[in-house]
Length: 136
Image 1 (cartoon, one colour):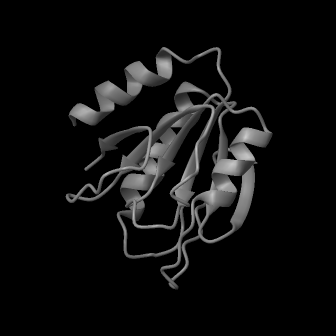
Image 2 (cartoon, rainbow, N blue to C red):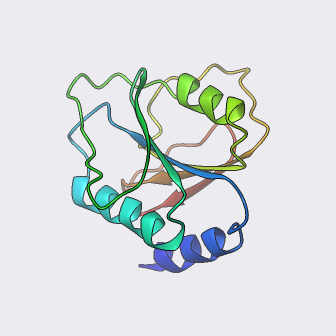
């Protein structure tokens, strides 16, 4: 549970910033309950955080509420490009992307904001940029 404390500190240090949580919904073969708990964690700490559900396209962009439900797909195709571009357009200052880091991202892509890759698996691939945190 070390990740709880680390994530809490990161979120608290960014209370005055625009935050977004992105969830890779490209597969339902993931730790659905863990991801729901992480999203709930954000809702309780920073209720104004926006939740983006995306796979190869953005599926939803909404504030996190009690009724928030994450809809997973079974195709396994993920691309982070559109969601990260959305964050830049919306002037998001910190993105927390919950994913296994196996999706597509152009090699040359750079972002002007902080990215934390929250990985709900034992194996943690190298991220193209940003910081990686295992959340198992």
